[in-house]
Length: 172
Image: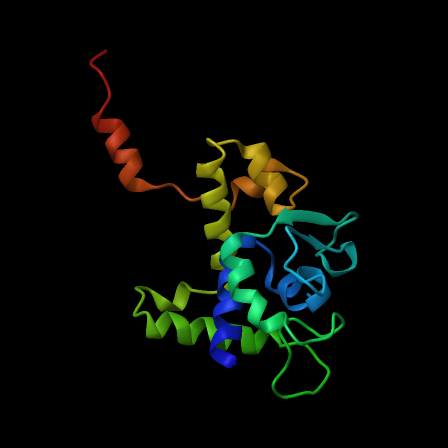
């Protein structure tokens, strides 16, 4: 049970781009309508960091596959990621952090100290930026940012691509 829950958490973090606080506030009803997985996931305004409106994103098929076993035979009002320590509560950010760190260690990732829930969000931003054809406005919308300037801070320079672009320049 915990292995599938943990995998679902990691998948959701990577493919939806939500903040860990938003992901942990989700209930079963947010992703499962009682019969099947939903196509879109709405982060309600009340669980979002400093927002005046809700944000809706597509629920990736891989997320649906990972989440379905967690949702079957559960009430819509159950926390999607329940606490194993306190009945009726959602998983804590600290427990989610431990799950991420253990997964990074098991995968023998380089620079494990930098792996965090926020790193998943930054990775999502980079993926969206690439997939959108480098459209900063679309990426900002996917991230739930009001300003593209906020989104720009999430994007890192890919030094391999930069070096390749430099080397591929024509003579002036």
